[in-house]
Length: 317
Picture 1 (cartoon, rainbow, N blue to C red):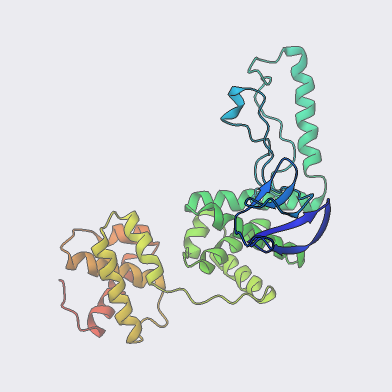
Picture 2: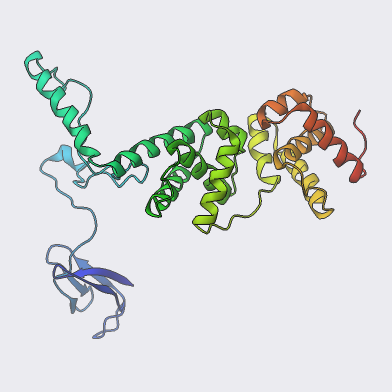
């Protein structure tokens, strides 16, 4: 089934073209890029003409260009306020051939670079987005978030800007809250303590802004489950798959018994990892788990005792 959106240079509604030739019944339908015709490869019937190809534009002038002859530019980057489509002047003082630029032309290049940066973010909104996206990218890099998660956080920040929710609030605080919200939405949560340690913001401010965004943007976010922390913590502690599986089973049993309500998810995950590691006779200290999970050793001991007692597990000490 072929789809196209442009015909004779004019935008029209998306049209589905039947994949069967009405003349001979063949399904061998091809697109003649040279003439812009959609035709049957068996009988030669032209099904559509003046078809505009929407793919990449190719050009090859010699054998060296055959390996990389695509002429299209890079894709849009949602993590940049202008989607990365504007001109970028490199900071290296070299020309296109790699030769150093003379001292006479360096001052001119410096002025061009300075004005290019000024004109790239010409108004207050663009400057705001530029600063916020840089902060989101920095936080995401430190926390080890994927590019898709950072893009989603930038998209959430744009929504807040369109609703005029950033007025009177810190850009860093809104950006941190967008990161926290995105992590919870995709099921890979980060604690407010982790984000606070990266941004040097008070976790209460992040939590207050997060609740504000959820209310104003009408976001429906499910409560964080302790099981969502297990895999990440175990990977940072270099624990094997058996520990991950056993820790998740412990938390699943506790969830069925309604033991988890009112407790910190990260603290419960840390305690379950500690119990699982002890069951597998793996030597690991509570302090090491506490450092990774951003909870105290006292919290791990308290959650450990509760899980062992209420699940009737064998005491490990």
